[in-house]
Image 1 (tube, rainbow, N blue to C red):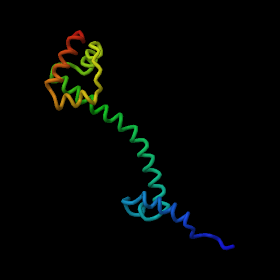
Image 2: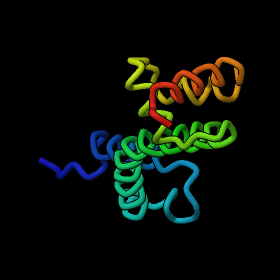
Image 3: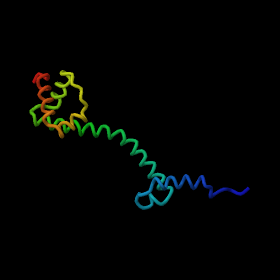
Image 4: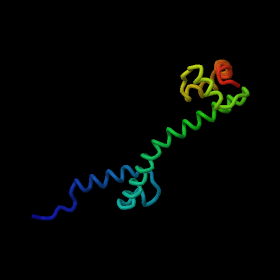
Length: 119
């Protein structure tokens, strides 16, 4: 029985890797061995960065809220403390959007927080 070298399974597996490496630069998109390494690394980056994205967005929201609070003369930590004491539960994404899109409502929240934060 002859050896199967050009089997479709092997070809399909290699083509799957090359398809994933489409758009990569140079050899990384053309040769199976280098494409395999590049795809493996890219999948590691994707896995890591799906988790990092959550941290990055939270940092962005906190920065925006902090800037809006400072404009009202209150620190971020005092603002959050005041909201917690007033039992107002709004997530940071919503607070960030409110600070950008509805400054008057955000200003009211800041005043509420100021009353409850002992400032």
